[in-house]
Length: 136
Image 1 (cartoon, one colour):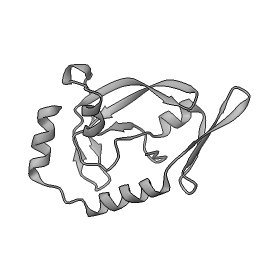
Image 2 (cartoon, one colour):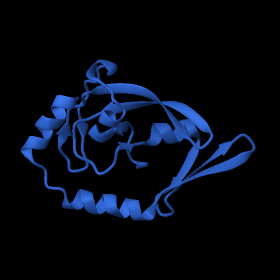
Image 3 (tube, helix red, strand yellow):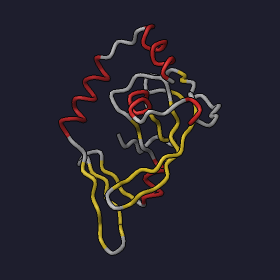
Image 4 (cartoon, one colour):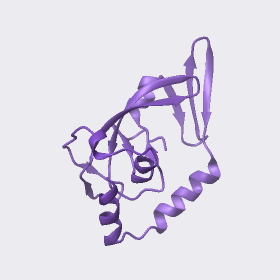
C-alpha cells in the first residue's frame, strides 16, 4: 500500500515471516507509532532492505510492527520522495522518471477493495498478538 500521509515505511508480520527475518536482523526503534485505529503500537525494530520499483532498486528503512493489517507493507512519503514519484490513489498508480522515460507502477483495484473490506471486518483477538510475538 502507498500511504501519502505516512512518514515511515511499515512492515507487517506476514512479510516479516515470509522473508524469514529474525529478531537479530532488526535494529532498535524506540518511538511508538499510532495505528489507523488510533492505538499505540510499539515497533519490534527497524530493518533496511532493497526494494525494486520497476527498473529502480533503492534501500528502504522499514519499521517492523506486530499488528494486524491486510497489507504486507506500507510505503510512504520517504519512499515516494526517494523514487521521485507522484502517486494517485484514485488511479492506483505511481509514476516516476527513470532516465529519459516515465515508468509507471499500477495497483490492483480489486485487491485494494479486498484489503479495505478485510480491514473493516477484522475483529482483533487477544491471542493473535501473542502468536505473532513468538515469530518476531
